[in-house]
Length: 377
Ligand code: GLY
Image 1 (cartoon, helix red, strand yellow):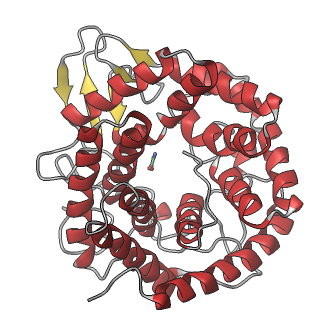
Image 2: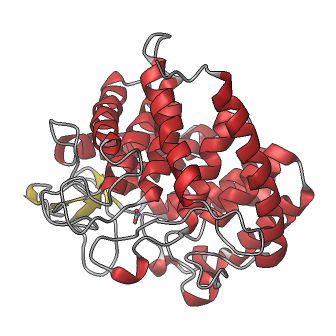
């Protein structure tokens, strides 16, 4: 039987880690404090110039801090600090901020503070947490996702932003941040996760009364479908919620989504479809969903008993190996490692392309396997 204890997996992960080190060193020297998103012809453009508030703008910092933690190389720390300062442009412009303050500053300032104790970084983190907390809607008990006259929208992705609030409560000893996070997570459990372990992407609540309005389609195929990255956010996000609160219902939700995710991913040899409930043709993949789910599964495995671990650990290894065997670019002269990531079902330009968060989660997953990761979330 396949099992995670097999030495061949560890040897494989060690080799991949060596390649990550070589490629990230070359890429860091080339990209520096530019903020990557999707490369064109092997080169990243600078999202810092195109949209400083864009939700993915923290992932390069996350990679840099993970690499600093794993290797101790100052190059990564110095570059990450440069990016952190650039992101002040976003933090100082409140009306551009949305719920993705978590994705951005957990990877930038909070990671810096956790690793180095830098006080300026802590202040930035708390400011970001304040901005996220200001999005809490008490009538519906949720964190409002976006700006642009959508005050009733909450989305599954936001589970990954809530650790910023749990962190702020730990730092300030003020429970308000964590209370808002928990209320939001409970609302997500009520309206976003379906009984069979699949998930909606979006729920719209009445922002004045909190009543349910609709579950419209999101970045997947259509309303009622099953956007695979959304399922991966749920798997990992509920597990993080369990780790912060100890509430078993969150761990159970993570398991339910994990079982559903693995059953679907097995049908396509562990490179997940972009949407698990879309027409059989055309076939679109999303490696980012596989990488995120793998990290969630590795975290989940740490929270269960000995005889339960194998399902999650081996599932995670299969997802990461499928990416490495079929969709990695190890040319050190080109930016980005993981190809075949998809931002959205109905937009051709960013379907089956390398995307910065695919690299972040692939790297986090491999670092977890070689026991060199630290918890950014
Ligand atoms: N948080 C947006 C996405 O996953 O594409």
